[in-house]
Length: 138
Image (cartoon, rainbow, N blue to C red; front, side):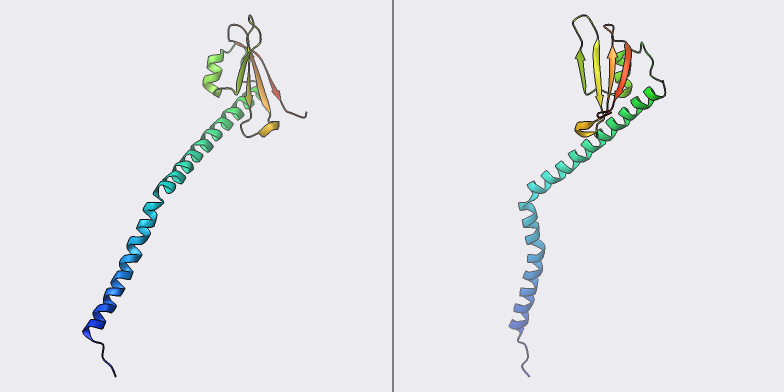
């Protein structure tokens, strides 16, 4: 039987040591090489979560406005500023004419192209005088 010499044991231990060090160091180098891409993905994920939270908030505000209309809790003569504060910014406001008020449109945020919408009409003193819920195709 042949005995291992001291040199063979040392060489084998050195190889094992180098393999262990390589397994620890090289993945770190690969990770550092892709750190920019990893951070980009992480930032995109955070932005996606923020957008989803904002969309959920807009959906809740839309549902609250619709419920208030259906339950007759929306008062005529309410100021536009108060309505915007309670239900958030509309999707669009347009001036009817130079001497008349505005029509503001609230689109259902998750409704897509055929989204239900709410029209709020304000007089020239920015007070609510009418509203309407429109459902496409009905």
